[in-house]
Structure formats: C-alpha cells, structure tokens
Image 1 (cartoon, rainbow, N blue to C red):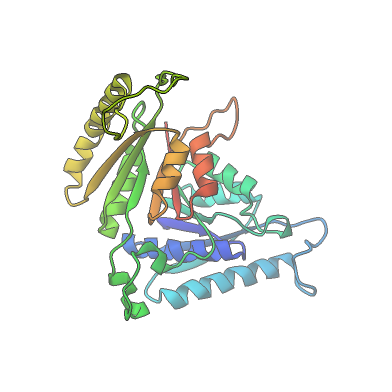
Image 2: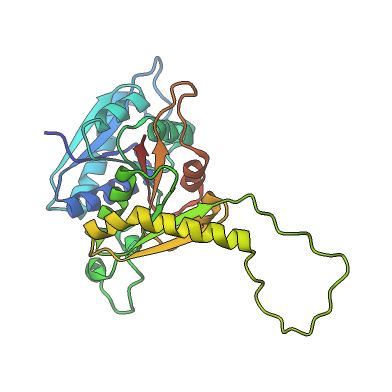
Length: 314
C-alpha cells in the first residue's frame, strides 16, 4: 500500500530535518512514512562518493542512516526506506504520485551531489500534483511549538501549544484544496489559523503640498482615504464570505482574518515570522511556459523560515 506521506532525503541536514518533520506529520495523521532516496548512475564515479564505495552502496548508506535516525526518534511509527534509481525530479514525482504529501528539504548539497538545490526543488514544487512541504535545516520538534517556559523537560515540549498556521488566500480564485489543507493542519495541531489576504488598488494619494499648511488641530493618525477604505471593506467582506463555510466545517479551529493593502509576498513573509506552518497555493502547470510556481510562492520559499506547504490547484 502507498504511504500517505513520503519524504525525499539526500544526505543533507535539510533532508534530515525534512524527514523528522514528515515523521511528526505522519504521527499526527496516523499514517506511515516512506523515506525515499533518488540516485542515478554517472559515467564516472561522482566526486561525493567515498573511495572504495559504489554509487549504489553510498546511496544505501545515506538511506539507512536517515531511516535509523527517524526510527530512533519515532519508535512507534511505521517507516519504510526505498531507493529509486532515476532522474531526480522524475523519481520524486513518481514516488509522490499516490501519496497525500511530499516533504523535502528546502536546500541541499548543491553541486556536491544533493538533489535539493533550488532549481530541482522548484521543479518538483512546480510539477507535483500533490502538496509539497519544504523544510529548512535546523528545524526541530520544539520549533513547531510556542516557546516552553523554564523548567520544562524536552519530553514535555509536545504538550505545549503549537504555533499558529498561516494561510495565504487569494479571493479572485479561491481554492477548496488549499483552504481545506490549512484548516486541517490547524485542526490536527489544535491551534489557530491566521488567514492573510493582501490586495493592491489603483488609488494613489494626492501629492503633499510644497508649502506646509498651518492647522490648530491636534496631530493624530492620518485618516484612510475614502477610495482605499472602501476597497479594504470590500475585500474584508469577500474574505469573510469565502471562509464562512470552512468556519462552519471546522468549528473548533480559531480563525483570524487579516486583510491589508500591499505586496502579497512581503505581507506573507511578515505574517509567517512566528508561525509553525505557512500554506500557499500554486496554479496548475502551464504547458506553454513550463514550470511556474508564481512570484509569491517563489518569494516565500526563499524568505520564510518555517515549513512552507505548497498546494497545487486549478
């Protein structure tokens, strides 16, 4: 039977962090975990393969070390390891075809031999029909939770509250798969969901007069221009309408809605600073231009420190 969650490893610290994150997610979902290492033969031995070892033997060693590390940290989890001899992107996509989720490290060994370089991971994200989560090196179980108080033992960390989940929402073409992924992630963690929507308007404030105006009125915050205020109110109503059925479906998930004018990438990076997970969408593959993750998704993958889930949709 296929595993609901598959993680790709390559011997890098990012890949190992992704494997442990995937193991935690598998435990939350009550599923098994498949640990995949994709390798391929070279005409000449790759420079990262140790002397006296074949490429396959080196691949088996990397996979075995990752599986043992995850099993030691998650002894009750059903884990299987699998070697795939194929082109890296093709092997990962095939391994993820029958799963609910593919997890990768956000960066890898680059030219030394790891597959999780920016170009490869971006191609996987851009072509995968399944959601992909990218995890940075250095992430641990404790990072998903709010800071523990002094005196809390490491084994007590899972009992501390989870950090909130952030959803980047577009209102022109809201996607059920994207919204449900975010609500379900928050529900499984028993935490809140912060829905963030950024929009741009054509309104531009009038130029400031060159001669200061003298006024006896006390200083205070500048009023929001009427066209901008009306656009903000319209967007807030739209977001509320989109989320209404999902609030009803997931009544136990606390939801906060943030609607602001600005660049979506900048707003999302700021909103995800203290989050445990950021969820963004990716439109379907455009065969005329090839792989395309979109500028917002591309930006958050490079600038957000927490795990990022990219959910494909039409």
